[in-house]
Image (cartoon, rainbow, N blue to C red):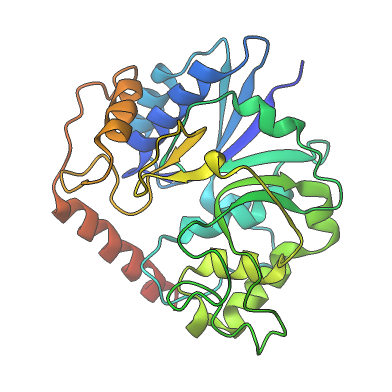
Amino acid sequence: MKPLTIVVACDNHYIILLAALIKSIEANLAVDKKIAIFIIADNVNNTNRQKLQQSINTATTTLVWKEMASVIPEGMKLPLDRSSYPLNIYMRLFIPYFIPEEIETVLYLDVDMIVQKDISTLFNINLSNHVVAAVLDPRIITFDNSWGGVLNYLELGLSGTTRYFNTGLLVMNTKLWRTESVTEKIIDCIEQHKKFANYPDQYGLNVVLANKWLELDPLWNHFSTIETSESPFLIHFVERKPIYKAYNYSETFKQIFYSYLKQTAWKNFKPIGESSRYIKKLKNILNKLLRK
């Protein structure tokens, strides 16, 4: 049986999050399934690559490393946004171009997630004529959200009630994505409307795929900032991550994260101070200034 294809993008700073994510996927995966995780590496050093390899269950999981510069197709350029997000947020846009063409369904995940359900069930979804399946963003919900939506929706000829998805989890129809030239359209959209792109990759994806995406159960992308009496299928650590001392959201979610991290080569890791987070953001901004 062919392994299920999962893609992530990661740097040295967040490799710890990725380690815990992979252990959570393995722990909940159906016994007859295997996974191939393509890691788009944003300057991940050899020490961390070796530690991650040591942390996985090799009977279930295969890691495939791809350097960030190598996944960008010739002739395509990253948009120059004004945010402090790392350039690797755009790497999900290039997945259909570096994944083998025979693989038509790919799961993209942000690394700041923990899985609590068999991820293989997402690969059984019938995408039909949808380019992606995703979860409604619970904080933004619709394009007319005043702080995070698509504020120029009228200019774009779209309704303010258009539903807005979070891009942290995407089940991708790679064949249809390429056929409809989605990547090129998104990059062009962000470049043209960058002053409205507070969350650049999400803005472009939501505009280009407006009303063309399949909505998943919200439990497949539950934000750590939102209290719930249910057990999410997937916990998404938006805002402060549990690797920081300043994390102040659900203690239960934090404990779940560390229960998986303790099964990795980072089992002795202790939460770090805010200065590391700010330094990372400054580096992200500097990288973009250097590109300009």
